[in-house]
Picture (cartoon, rainbow, N blue to C red):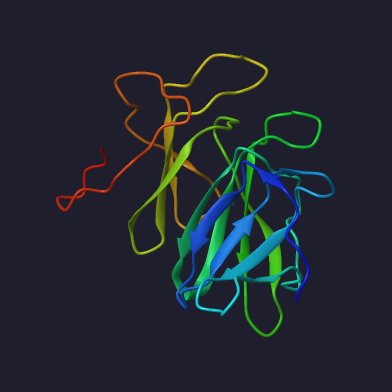
Length: 173
């Protein structure tokens, strides 16, 4: 039997191309910089704790989107001191896993959603900036090749912990 997973609260769970699931960040007893991988096809749910890298920043209540080539875009969230993060990072898995800093958001946020629009273009909507305390009526998008997030058409209402679905016609519900 392998190690028992640590209790977690508010990580993201993202299905990777090979069918495994990456659990990223969250509030746990030791380090919300963790990246853990679960293989649901294993005879007993087999956790792999050491994927060879960890997040640059502590993150909880963040959003994660799967990019091409099993890369994860990890966006915003709260750090260990409850400060709202204003940055994003990309984590690459493979022979030499690494997480590296990406672009700064226009608006710091946690409790938001991330939706893949088309090849590696990610839209984030809503959330809260802890310093402001109220839900945001903002949206931003980015491609991993870009160095800045771009303001998008804002939603009609403020959203805190929203859900989003990409419709076939390209709109986000």
